[in-house]
Amino acid sequence: MTEREAVTHLLRRATFGPTAEEVDAAEGDGFARTLDRLLAPEGPDRGAAATPVPVLGPDPAAQLDRGAPREQRQRANQQRREQVTRLLDWWLGRMVVAEHQVTEKLLFFWHGHWATSVQKVRSAGLMLRQLETLRRLGRGPLPPLVDAMVRDPALILWLDGQRNTRKAPNENLARELMELFTLGVGGGYTETDVREGARALTGWLVDRRTGAVRFEPRRHDTGPKTILGVTAPFDARSYARLLTDQRETARFVAGRLWFRFAGAHLPAPDGLAGADTLATLRRIFTAPDFAQTRETLVKQPVEWAVGAMRQLGIRPADLPEQRRRQLVGGLNALEQVPLRPPSVGGWPAGTAWLTTSSAQARLRAAGHLARAAAPAVLSRLAAVSRDDRPDVLARLLVVDEWSERTRAALAPMAGEPRRLIVAGLVSPEYTVS
Image (tube, rainbow, N blue to C red):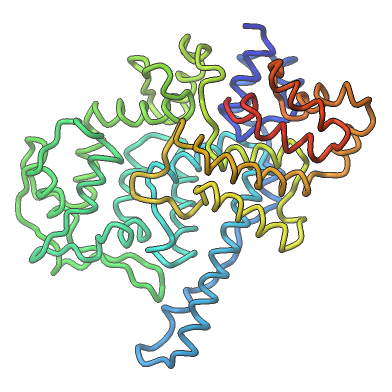
């Protein structure tokens, strides 16, 4: 693999999608320096500064009295939906313009790992708070992250933690905490561990008016619990600590990072877990097997769309409202909208994104992206001969090389730059990283 191929592969996986200029700069820096810069960027993130976190205000519906008239409740629910739309637009915009791309890509990973949906939480403010927790702690070691997440109000609402009391334990959060978030399926826990873990998590409530999570001692089971062979009067924090002390937790989470950043083509190597998440990512990107995962990972729809926006010079915040709604509608048709994972298991991966219906939805979404492409991008295509346009498009989309079949499909569309862009975006070379 050449240096350019190596840094291109790294940038495709570590970011939402590099621009040609970013690949050029990385080739000059070399793989090692590029990796250092990705994991520990220097200076402020100007893209993040240009997309400040939205001030959403309190939950409109939670401020109403129980006897509020129907019209007020309808208006409050509409305001709730508008808050969710603002949050979604902001986050997509941040993904596109952020210069510290690993931070954004890692945040999206954690959002899928601790999969929480606003459709049940029904609060953009609580979803934003969860994202801020994942952003703040997601680059570091696991114990502080798990400790914060077992007391996260959005997660508590999502997994019925507020219904978990000493008199009537609810196992949802404890089960998913072990099965999906820490130990993984087959990670050595039993049904008894789940029941005992649920007892440890009792007592937490979410105040929807303020968004605060509070501990109610009278609802908490203070008795001894035996979890993973250890007996103690566990509460949420000591239970979280017990889970992160298990070797299996570090191995499982490292494997999930490998699965999302390297793919399922090859199994995760042994010894992948580092002292913190960034150390694990470094081991992933420098593992000998990582180089063998080129052209094996189907892009998730969000990765595909955000990467295309970065490469086509599209800035969501600058688009008219109708065009922004079209782009989000495209993600909805592709069945991956941030803030709305389909289940606590998160989104699927791999060929699940390559169905017949998804191909049709991707084609429509590509049309929306092509219509929103920056004038400078269209000018670069128009400035060269029709025969040269597929190669210019390959550079714009950071495609190494078109296959003969794809090149033959692109040729008839070369006279219309937007149609050419659409064809490039839905090509196998672009859809698979």
